[in-house]
Length: 400
Image (cartoon, rainbow, N blue to C red):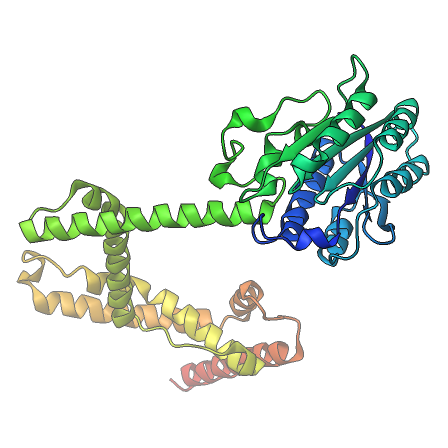
């Protein structure tokens, strides 16, 4: 990649008001400068570009910079005025290039001319020899008045190149719809030693006829719009296919395959919800707000949960009813079940009165501190109650 510092000299004379380029010469010039700036920045990010006007009093609008946005901002504010001063503009551009920061950068001047040149042929040749001595390349884009300026500009470029030189170029553009399209096929955009872009086709070989590096936002918008349009067309075609299949009573294979996984997921979800509903009907679970409960209420709820865990075998027996053979002796089984239930209740009462068992249960409950005062008070009261009942039982035995 070639390192270059480029000064762009634009013609902002009164001739730029003409409408032989759409919409006017000055607007076509703005688009062309935009393309040149982006091509320089694309060839090497370290390239610098400057901007000056040649009509009226030659003025440097932007010094050499790598920020293309500054140049485009100033270029949009340029208005046509006065007459062109080509020689003065080239001298000022050469002086600006001498003060470039990157001394290893090659120097290049790009001149846009859209009005007749008043300079003498001898002065132009003398200036070309001076630029050749300083190793400055010049690209001239002549448009609008190309027939009047062709001879002077051709001698100027031939003097710069010499016999074997090819670094300077002259591009003449006849009146037409777009100045930028003509530059796409010129070596001004391809760069020194680059191939002309005309072989890429009338639109430069870019998608939708837009260079992504020159206008990335427009290229992205066109690409997204094309993708949305393609998706919309595919959706419409799928709807038409589905409607025609529904009218004929045949379900398209693609629709069945596409909906099979979704249908299976919906059925599985419905079955799981039904199972949950049945479980909720069998064993309703109340919603408990632990944040608003006191420690004593939490202890009571923990005891209730432990009681339900003990009664789960009974629920499983209810879920699995006995067979016909087992129902032959209903009286005996009722008696056995009643005695077994009484024994289980006695065992449960003994377990619940055991302070050590309650202490182990409370330690395993989440969010309950077994060492808190409320827990200790509750456990001590249970112990005292157990002692009182034991004493009462001993007294009853003594009386008998």
